[in-house]
Image (cartoon, rainbow, N blue to C red; front, side, top):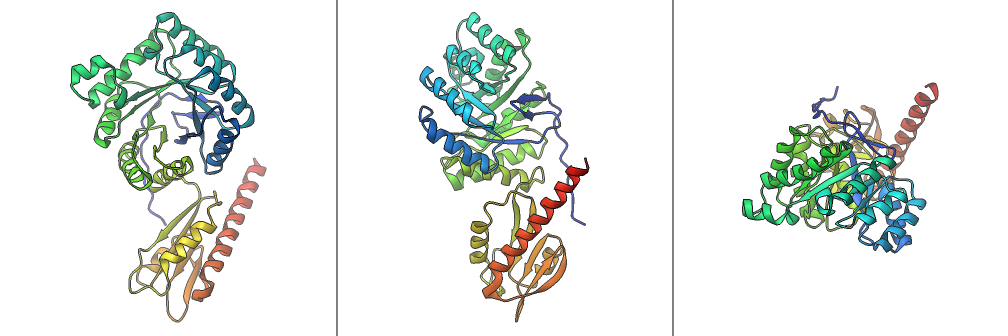
Length: 370
């Protein structure tokens, strides 16, 4: 029996972004942001479709102008995933995308301007059933907070967030979520920890401007992993200077590593050494490339020798252990035959796809029985 670890979740208010629940007992959602020119409707729709195929639950789109707002409306008509409009300063853009079917507004109330403008946006959000995301960023703190603290700190991020929260509270608007992002892991983690006990709304996690694919993925995994392991966080974005599809994949990898949420194949593979009986690295590269389309949860072990191989193979759906003169295949924990090196990848792909088909059929039966 596999070791199971449950992470107690911070209690939070549940909100809805389109048809996706965020907070409460809802699954932690993974989102990303398009990096195409929003006015290029075709390119933006294509990218949204790509990230949805990778598993994105929510997608944010930058809407910096009224022209972009009109393009957003056309994009909204062509995709089914909930869309979040990223808006700064111009309240009229927020009012327009609300009319065009936006599912969430990422707009800081304190940056909109006069009270009547803030009230107009909040009333529009209320009328259309649209939640708001308050997004605080260490790189754009208010000038008076920069003077007060001298530099961005967790305390400064929280104070900034509470200013925007107070505005929504005064207008009796509670359907919002909050993010407090910084590129420094400790600063972001400290800010999220501090605010987690002060409000009941969902928290959107992120380490902003984390970096390129490798360094950004590592930084995000550390920062978000620390918070998620403490039960903090209801939705997340991994911010990478990379293809948004990679942001989604890394996000799911982080959740999967903590046993919080799974999508696709969970590969368990040895780093390889002189004991290996086949090329583990080459085999893994080929398998990951061939099976990139699989979204069903499956555990697969690829171990190069018989030291740790049998133990790992017995605990997964499909396992392979290096051995001489032939490697051993395990299915559902049981020995299922020997496999020669030249047949490894083809055999594993075939067995994995069969397991996926079996799981999908079983799930369909459960759904049919009600």
